[in-house]
Image (cartoon, rainbow, N blue to C red; front, side, top):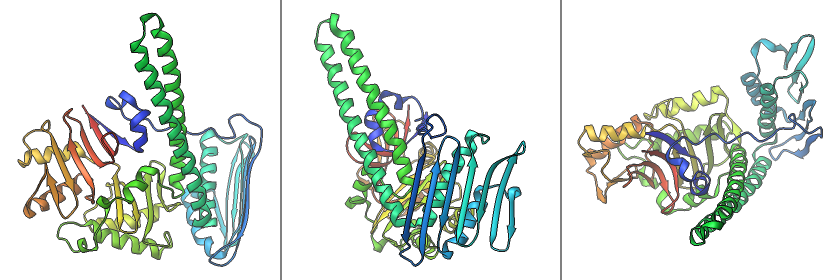
Length: 424
């Protein structure tokens, strides 16, 4: 069996089709960047008064030949900018004089990049004619992170929501086109054989366009998530009664997440990563950890992992976490689902990994095939879940289906599931 992590529920419905049964979902392709073809300039500029005091100005120019970033900011942003740049740029390229930092890279007597930072100003330049594609991509991503740090969450949040709306629109268009392709395919079966091939070609072209739109939507949705937006399925879950975390659960024996969540949010508020405990978008993906639009440094990640470790959530347990008021959704990124089910079999809780099973997980209770497990067994279940990188949370399910597939996460309806699939 192969593990398949589903990032967006819509992709299951129309983008993957039957391929989801046989292979891991590929990482969405990167969107084209300006250095690949066009000679036009893409620029961004902004100036505003920081709502926490101080003025901000940002100017970004991105052409085929160069990438330039200039910004002025309140002094309170300085320490975080230092942290980001130290984390992203090579230490051997760095020099420091008082409150000023410089990172300069040269190759064959040509300056590849130059970064200068002081307590109120940041200037970066990259020569794309001598830089590698990987370095160009890195600087463009770094610019987005720095813009987020400097501009604060409000402007970034608006941009994130606009991106997510565009992604949702593209997904709706892709779903509509896939329905049309399916209709044509059904029609082809009802007509004479002579016309069947042309119908199939029409359906194939429409399905390919639907897939293209879905891939584009996936790219935009990932960018939006980095800025703090959440997609429509997550919004639906965060409005559902089944994901409500009651305050009465905070002192439940052997259910560690509520206390871990409380301490984690306290630290995030203290570090000014979030401004409210009621609105949290904690996204983890191969490019890093993003919380409400801020990319965490390695130091911050290790700090928060140490908090979670006190509650038996190990450093190797990576997940994404979403919170709106008292509703929470936790998506496990590296759950060992097969290992968990094997442990249940070894302890005699299930007879076979092929028997139909539905576990409704709430942290304080587990309903197994419609019947609540005992308090004693609940302790064992919760321990096994954490051991296998699965964080119990209200509304979560683990299922062995009639087709012997394994599912972990949240089911929205009969066709849509957000979380992890393991298929035969």
